[in-house]
Length: 457
Image (cartoon, rainbow, N blue to C red; front, side, top):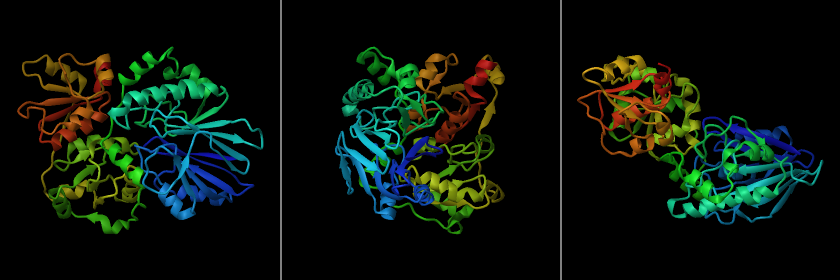
């Protein structure tokens, strides 16, 4: 049997190739938007892709199933309850498939979505008993999937389904089965996930806090009291995956290099200027009204999805022109296809043009303590989650979590006085400050190092 896990950076996504080189056949599970990696694997292993399986209708990334079908002729398989508008083969609980020495058994495991399935994998060269379970967004390493994405109206039903799938359906499986989920650390389809890419059912039963409740009531309370933020992009991605995503556009970089004048025209027409430079550089000087998501440590696609409305026309400000194609691929993974181009020559071109710039001040924890004890203390806004805020916060600070901050239509601060934005490390505060500025706020500062620095000081 051939088995390979494919990791997609920036989203915490995993997809899988399952097959048999001896038989020359291969299936792909949960393909990402750009599908070249699966074609490459099949060619290297002398296999032909014959089946494409989805574990559910995804909310956090656009599926590559449509393009992969166009390239290979393979059918797409999804659970019969998924209301998809594209041609597909319908899965039911108990369905079985064979790819040479690899066998797959379908389990209907609703909870993350009503149409979620898991796939039990057996290596028939060794045993007919299952060796692996692909759990989709049901069970992660260290956490479980969130049940709220399909909608508030069926949330209670989804929580009950999630409990039954985890505590009843999976309970019948042996401890030794290896768990391979659809997501890992960095995904917003769950929280508190381990950085490990796989586990076993036995170890998750031992160490996963969401599998240790004695009854449904405690499980439900824990789920509903700590749901993670829902990015703006999720609803749009769900709709795209229900209808079937188009093949992403191919780009010739030279055609997307924009001058300062062209960017001003696009901004006036409503385009979002997305600045992906590091937060300190952005804070020092940036295009007024632009949104900052720091990509210097790798793509932070969930945060782009959090702050940039779906279907937006986007103009990029990059630390290097050479990153344009790479960034476009990243953005296409979450459905942002309408990238108009990038500021050719980087932010220095904007500076040399003499156009207006904005900036944020950074304030140390020690300086903030002194300012708060003085005669004219600044205002404070904490943008962390309710759980983080309840654990520890600065006395007298206003609490405006990121999801609520993003949703407000007008500036919630008084521009006549300085307002210091606070998060855990400073990363979210930088994003929040750029969002607030785009809503008309001014006189904003950021607590350097966030609450980590505040507690250390």
